[in-house]
Length: 256
Image 1 (cartoon, rainbow, N blue to C red):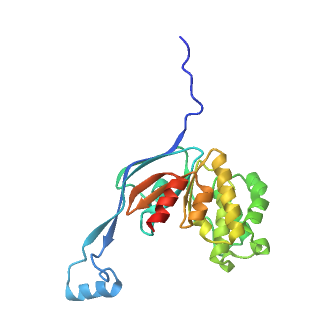
Image 2: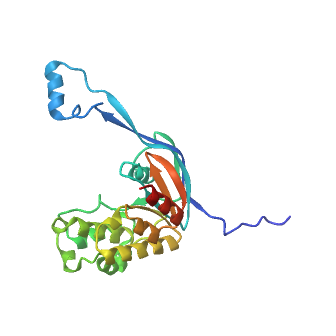
Image 3: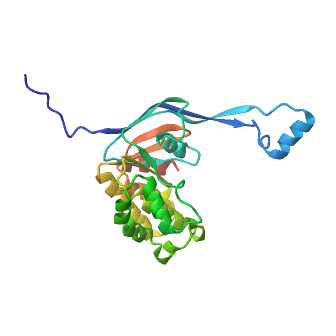
């Protein structure tokens, strides 16, 4: 009997989101109920504690991402984009439903490893080691990270002297020095000049072409159009549209 053939052109799933719900518990049903003065008044007046209100951030989201895709997440503020990214990264537990990933997702910003009192140089070393690179690989990528970040002589100064844009550029340069199975980028292209955005978009395409999967949250439809092969439009925690970039971006722009 002949051995079954394997179709190497079959798309390989990297992220499967199945019926995902994420609910936050918020204390205080009304504005002002959760602040310190209100809490003190309740103690003095022997008032009952404020009610717990459930906020449904993600409502039954289902989709599959495949290796080699770059997926843009668009939607108004509060639509659930960042919550979805953090859940895929394993930083938030699903309230209901499941998230399956092939490999370890990486949320852009090795913030836990970057320290304001250390120089950019030391933070590059710490950030790369935190991502699993060896010391030899850190040395190999160091010059490229410095050049890509555009920090120049500032690389020898403590990060607390950096502007928010400089810090974000350094985080992006560190995070994208490694090929990721799944890379999640939240508004990384919002800071920096046109040249940095152009280089960032090119780097994202390179990561996608290296057989990874990239998710990008951005309010810039131009960045989404230049970078992504697919777009998911979130609205009030639900998928309103999922499809090719041109179609979804046009529909979103027309609705606004």
